Image 1 (cartoon, one colour):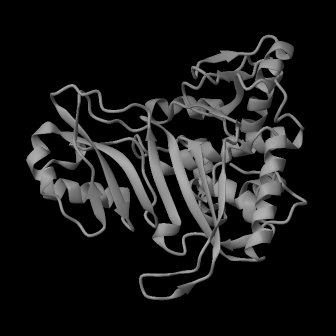
Image 2 (spheres, rainbow, N blue to C red):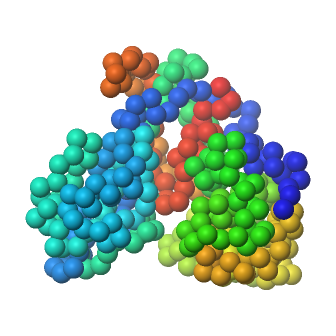
Length: 363
């Protein structure tokens, strides 16, 4: 496996959508309270008395896995029997839904931890599964700004306007998946090319899959095709999430502009829905694999380990609340400068840090 130097450079440091507009600089996560995440569930408790309970878990400065292990320890429920929809950041204050067997009700009422708390328990018929969430609401604070607060707010508004003009935020994976400086992407692509697997949830395979998606997105951007609809594109219906292949680009382009559809890119895998091989969309997806020197047969060899899926290329930006934030202190008493806060929602699987990268750079 090898990449062209220009492809590797684009993956490690993707060009900004808002090139030419100054950013605000600054720092995230100066304290946990400056990075708040509230999970938006795909559904609420169904009220069916029986096997499971749904509860909200709020944690501060604790990984999701450590939080679940503590729940297991205090309730006596084996860790595999505790369900969750998604992982949440450690260096943050986060709220998410988890499920436990109904038999744990008494122990849940006794749960105590200085950095974790539980909400009321609600009867629910099923164990919560990974991916069962609609999105997340973020409230993030940027401090140590490169410019005064008023100027920072003006710069953010200008950048958000530019992103909206372009149809939204390009749905790139960030350093959480690819590693700081892209440390994981080369190893991930090598794992894909060799069909190397170590289990159903192989992080390196996911990193390689994500790198290929980013490369596909950045190539469409470079060709001016982010708001185009190509023959063969796999399109996603905004209202229902249903997928279909484009056979009439002119009609589907009008629907894209109306917000009814989104263009998806490939999350390559053994069972990914792909465009017709001789369509413009199919030829581009094949070109991306060839440029990474990955044989489609190696993806097929991964089987259930990496089945593949589709991911929308852009995220429409909804309402984003901006405000000035006062100075504060850390747990150790260190002084923190004033800053700005941003509150917004993103769909599941999209990264707040991708948006903040656009807003902060270049400082």
